Length: 346
Image 1 (tube, one colour):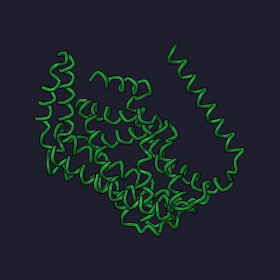
Image 2 (cartoon, rainbow, N blue to C red; image 1 turned 180 degrees about the horizontal axis):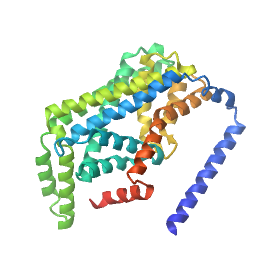
Image 3 (cartoon, rainbow, N blue to C red; image 1 turned 45 degrees about the vertical axis):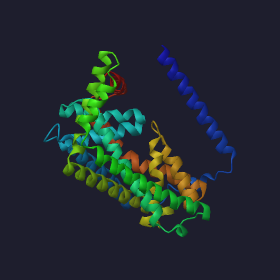
Image 4 (cartoon, one colour; image 1 turned 45 degrees about the horizontal axis):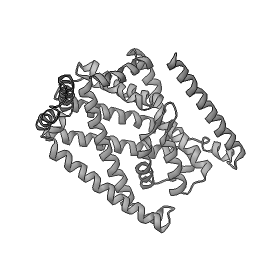
């Protein structure tokens, strides 16, 4: 009963907030015709090319996960990993961050490995993606001449400095990853000694988690596997840059954007995807609006329409296939909640 009341309260609150937002927009100077103009005259050839590249990037993620599985499970099914990736990203689009657990869960079930080890592999994947985002962000802001962007002298200095800082952090992350990748066993042993004061059942649970994490990240201890992971990560993000280039080409208002401008956009907006509102997205759109307006000088209405259209074109194409595959796997919201709850008892 309490859970049902909480859902009703949240639904009512969302309706009130949506109504207030519509009211404010209706009374503002927001030019709706300009907003809707962003959805007209779409070049379908470029759009279909971008959708193909979206699926290609997910296939790259499946290839990367197969490398992370090799120390535990040789000969993992690549079609199964690709299917789990599509379902996992569909869950993220529809459910927000709670959907992150779907892909590790499906892979653990399909490949008969521990769920906790696949959560560790997921964490390792996030680290590699962060490295690629930082490289993309730092490269774009340092290499692209600031006078090509609609920035004042102060913002130009901030952007240039931010690019160098991001590149330095990325390099530091790589150094740390290389320096500590061979010490998993030592770290587990030291962790066990450090937690000796805890009750036995907590020590055992911690030991299991540490062992599972070490198992899931064992691929990073091999130089050849580490190079493969870095190569696949670079491939994924190069494909994503190409995907967004096609998306910008498909939209009339951004069809003249150069590849370096698309790279700048991706570098700045990539951090916005850290915040997801189920079924809406949220962080991506806000960051995209700010970048398109403040960096590229588009009108607020145009930037808002483009942000919505870019999110729809970049994130929703996997949803139909993901729903079909998810239903085939017997997934539903209740099952996903049970998986999340199980994380606390691993």
